[in-house]
Length: 412
Image (cartoon, rainbow, N blue to C red; front, side, top):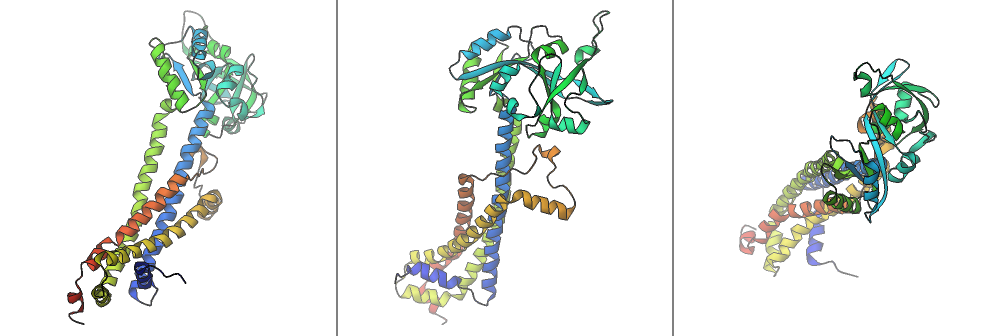
């Protein structure tokens, strides 16, 4: 039969449940660690899910790199396209024109962004083609593709015509009058991101150029690279060294840096705030072990008199905090993983009980709660909790280690 190490044996014995107030505090501390780890895993998983889904949606509807001229129009769009395609890591390029418009349908108005594209090239720099839910990406002539949310909110169906007013309709150029354009809906897409599905429509590049009176000019060129992260950054840096001002190449991450940065800051702050739940539970462990050292003063004196070193006494009480941490973390991890796995059914149940929508998609931009827990996040949470619980036993462990046998046994 394998014998437990001396320090572990005594640590487990001192933690053995008894009908005392100390045991109650120990259980409360253990539950506190469990709840802290549980909540931390659930929250970090949701924040990571938001970050992952947001990146996927942004990369799905946006190219890896975008070349623009600031406030200037690009009159040599095809030359820029060909120059960009010479970059080794650029796989595709497509020109575009984009701006706000006012649309009217059944006496109701909306103000989405209108993006003029070359459909054949666009499908190589974005996932628009794969997002089509109804109809097709047919933009020949006076045709338009709209988002699912916009179609549902305004009751627009395939074949309907929407009236589009562009900035040129309110500009006066002598006696010339520009009439709004009627576009036929030939397709409805669903990207899964509310902001795009309700606020973005697509036409052919020629139609957009006519609406904005651009002639042959464009607003920018979109590029697809071999890698949306390192590849996009490298291509943008190379192009910025070669392109003449005011042309500038920016990655999708740079164009959405504020949004992505806000998600990362929120994730970090939530981790810092919620870790204090575990810290509070650790104070309970500390108070328990301090009480134990007082109660076990005689036993500690005897053990030291029999030859136990201060290091062994120190390890006894540190192991007690570690053991509580192990059980607490194990319980929290199991509950956390179970919650992450069933986050949306839980949300729907709570919404029904509370009578309110806990996750409105028009606010959060996603149809359901995204949750993604990486091994790194899980190990960070579990490791942090174990370290905090172990350190909770440091003060009582030092007190016990410094106890002199003569002083411990004087009044016994």
